[in-house]
Amino acid sequence: MPLELTSLIGLAATLLAFGYTVPQFRKLRRTASAAGVSVAALGCSSISNVAWTAYGTLERDVWVALPAAVSIPATAGALVLAWHRGGSRERLWLPFVWGAVVSTAAVSALWIGQGPVTVVLGCSVALLVTPAALTAWRSHDVTAIAVTGWVMLVVDALLAGAYGVLAGVEANVIYAAVATTGSLAILLRVGIPPHVHARLVRLPAPVAPGGVTGGVTGPVTSAVTADELSLVA
Image (cartoon, rainbow, N blue to C red; front, top):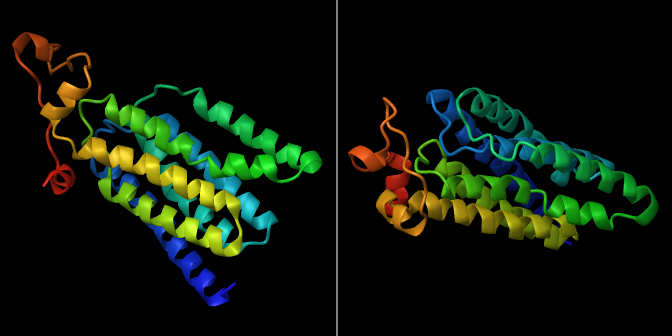
């Protein structure tokens, strides 16, 4: 195994892991709205980051522990901001269930080995990307979603997968497949123009200021941000 290559990939993955969590946090700090952002997804992600950090520490693999550890501050900060600024509170039970699943897998490793932990951690990112994707596809307004963060997550996932193959960390390989698929689903939603999304997904008309719905006075069109334009173009 080429040590220098794995260290280089691990360092790049760490930098990207920090980088892809920051855009969402910064965007929520700049805006008064958390439209299209899932509180449950951020809660699950925070739990997963702590679990990955503990797993890497116990396995004495710095390039497994460090990428997760540096992701904790911005993810937790985004969670607090999304909660206070109107982020989607659907499926708030999910972080509690996920915490129980992670704890159960960790305890079971004492008797049946690392198998359950590998699968649970590898699929952990699904608890971020699945609620985030569902919220995005069910939302009229996705202007609060930080596109750059999801693009960087795709790159980070590919690096994590490469490290997993080279270093024999199966959880990383599973993580890479799940993270890439989910992130692309979110990017596809943000890149779809509002009128196309309205045809693909039938949703209740959004309520305009004053309590008037789009179905009464005409469609209410969400503002298209620069991030959306960059994908649509």
